[in-house]
Length: 334
Ligand SMILES: [Zn+2]
Image 1 (cartoon, rainbow, N blue to C red):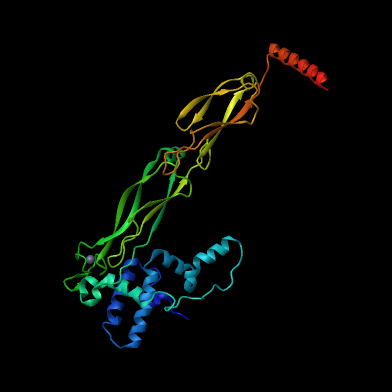
Image 2: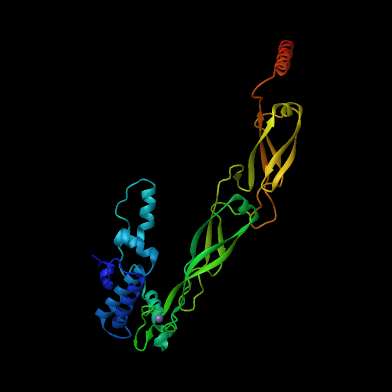
């Protein structure tokens, strides 16, 4: 049985991120192979604490670990299976082992990231690694998707601790402000552009605004994952829009002009004689802009012929006359 990762670091399950980093730092100082050369037990212990730290210092991994324990790496698969309604047996590779997780190079770079400022020497050039990508959801209205818009995204990014100047120590003692890590998490507000034409599910990439890289590696990217809100008047299919247009029965029969709503305002539409209910009229280029291009989708006006809700005596007479005409017509053609 692998040990509980919190026990490995000697912290409670409720430990704050800062406590976890501080605990790891203390243990890593004690067991690092550079400090204890040729000590197999210390090396094994170092691997163990580093693997535990790698999971517990990462919000996403820690959440999965809290929920699924040693099977945290299969969290996505387990949840996928639960979504499909099936049960799950023993997930493949039934637990987190240190061999299976981070390789030596991997936690070497975590260690270097924490300690490199004070260590110097040949190990001060860690293997560089690109930072993780970050996704953040944004919701926009159809009008905003039509014109393009901006959103302010709140990001958390590490910056050097001002109290200790990034060294992690103040006068030989662990810096109280950063817990000895040399970095603090800072909230940042970033204004990002949501381009015209985005759809639900569109991913807008903002280069280099993800997690910072390790050992000089480049930052990851930030992705906005877009949801476009439903609109009361327009239905969207790809880049085309559909809108219901009410046409009074007389205009449907004799032809006439009606107003069609578009995202940019109303336009006039000439309705030909004998327009049938349910007919779709295409207004070319009046749909949504095509993402990343200059083309536009189309707008389809769905004709809804409106019957009268009451009749005057005179109108009734005319309809009765029309009915008589229709009967004559039917008799002639049969
Ligand atoms: Zn500090």
